[in-house]
View 1 (cartoon, rainbow, N blue to C red):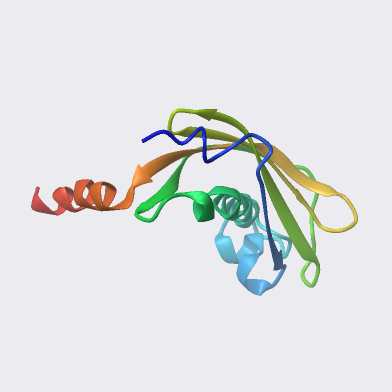
View 2 (cartoon, rainbow, N blue to C red; view 1 turned 60 degrees about the vertical axis):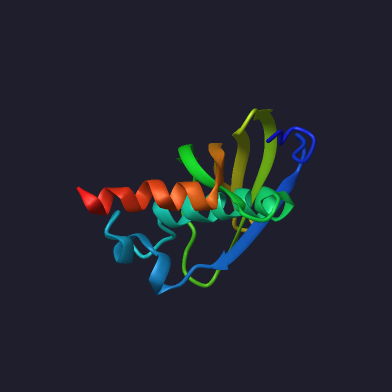
Length: 134
């Protein structure tokens, strides 16, 4: 199946979440401080990429993350709203490349790249389930 006619560079997605006790570094175990955790920021960026493209795919298809390279640039305390955005910058067959960014309303707190791969849901789950047989 050809996806270049469905997904175009420039397509964008956005996701937001408030910093709470459930997404700070202390909770994630990625540090001991009560500030927005790097893993939480990375997950929000990934969700923004999903928001950009999965709704455009035919039924039975979705994307999975395959690579994420981000820098966490600044701390964000509980109570603030973090907004992540993802812009599709390249479509290479079923491989998708995104530029991702996050901010807390006062400054950019993260940036990087994210790669996703378009998969057929049924085939992907079948492949995963085969692991149970071993």
